[in-house]
Amino acid sequence: MQPEATTPEPVPSPVEPPRAARLLSALQREVATVLLVLLVVACALLSPSFLSVTNLLNLADAAPLFAILAAAQMLVILSGGIDLSVGSLMAVGAFFAAVMSFNNVVLAIIVPILVTGFLGLLDGALAAYTRVPPFIITLGMLSFGRGVAQLGAAIYQGASASGAGAQAVAANKTGLFQGISDGTPFGSAFAIPFGAFVAIAVFIGLAYTLRYTGFGRHVYAIGGNEAAAGLLGVRVRPVKMGIYAISGALSGLAGVLLASHLGSAPPTAGQGYELDAITAVVVGGTLLTGGVGTVRGTIVGLLVIVILPNIFNLLGLGDEWQQVVRGGVLLAVVLLQLVIVRDGSIGGLSLRRPPAAPPQGAPQPPPAARIV
Image (tube, rainbow, N blue to C red; front, side, top):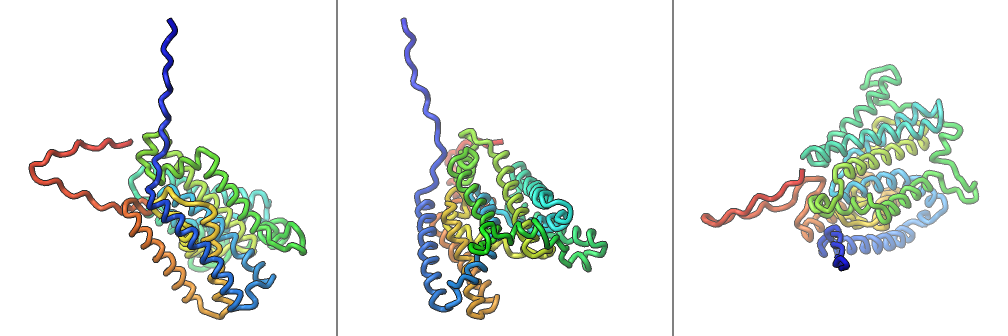
C-alpha cells in the first residue's frame, strides 16, 4: 500500500503594507518626478547659466555626498528607523581619511569606513536589543560623533578642542587621494568627477540589494511589520544591526569623498546633512513609517534637493530661503503621510493612538504574545 501523498504547507509571505501606504508612496514619487521636470524647466528659464556645462559639472560635484548619505538614510527609514548621525559620522570619516591620506590611500579609504561602520553597528545593537527608539539612539550618536571629530582634531594637532579642535585637519592634496573625489576617469573631454561614479555605484548596489537579496526583503518586512517579520522567520536583530552598520559605513565613505574634495577634514562638516538626506528620501516616496519606498524615488528626491540650492545661488537668494524651502517641503510631506497613514511609527516613536478602554463588566482580552 503506497503512502498517501501530502501537499507541502504553503510558506507564509511577508505582510503587505497597507494599500493606502503604497498609493501614497507612488503618488509622492510621481509628484516628485513631475516637480523635478518642472524645476529643471523653470531653472533653465530663470537662469541661462543653469544648463551650462560648468554649472552641470558643479551639480555633479556637489551631489555625491548627499547621494551617499541619502542611500544610507533610505535603508534605515525602510526598516522603520531613522539615522540622525549620518552627518556627524561623515565628519568622523573625513578626519580618519585625512589623517591616513599621508600614509596609504587604501588605508585612507578602508579605515574611515571601518570606524564609522563600527559606530553604526553600535547604533544597530542598541536599536535591536533595547527598547530605546532609533530616533533617540542616533540623536545621541550625532553628538558623540561630532565630539569624536572635534577631539580627534584637537589631539592630532596638539591643542585644546576649543582651539585646534575647531580647525580643519589637513589632508594630502596630491596624488591618488585627491583623485578619489576630483579625478576624471574619462579625461577632460568627459570631465565628470570620480565621486559621481562612486555615488552611482552605491545606488546600483542598494537597488540590487533591496530587490534581489534576502537581506533586502527582510528590510522591507521589518519596516512593514516587525512583529510579523519575526514570526515569519526573519532574524530581526541581526538585520537591524546590519542596516545601521551599512549606514555608518556609507557615511564614512562620504567622509572620504569630502576630505579628498576639500583637501582637509573640518570637524564641523556635515551639520544639517542628515536633514537633507531625510528630505531627499521622503520626497522621493519612502514612507517614514517604513516598509515602502524605491531607489528610483530617492534619486528623484535627491535631484530636487540638490537643484534647489543651486538655482537659489544662481539667482542670488540667501541661504535662509534655502532653509525655508527645504523645511517647508519636508514638513508638508510628513504631514501628508501622517494624515493618510495613521498607524505606524517614525524613528521608533509610535504614532498609534492608544486603544479605547473596554466598558466596565466587559471581558478582558487575553494578553498578546510578545516576541523576545
